[in-house]
Image (tube, rainbow, N blue to C red; front, side):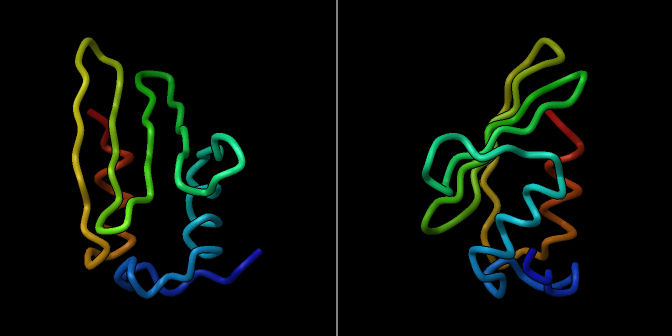
Length: 88
C-alpha cells in the first residue's frame, strides 16, 4: 500500500495510488475497473466520490436529502476527508 503524504498536504500532491489508498482507508470501494468512481456507505448515508480532472466530486444520498459538492484538489486531504465524512 502506498504511503500517504501528511494529512495537511493538498490533494494535488497525492499521486493516484495514494488517493486510491486514502479512499480505501475511508471505507470506499472502487466501482468498476476505472479508478475514478468510488462508493462509500455509512449507516445513515451513502456517497459517490468521483475523481475528476479539476476537482473531487461527492454526491451524498440519505437522511431524507441528497446533496453534492465539489472539492478542488488544492484543499488538504484532512479538510476534504472531514467534509466527506460529515455527510449530507
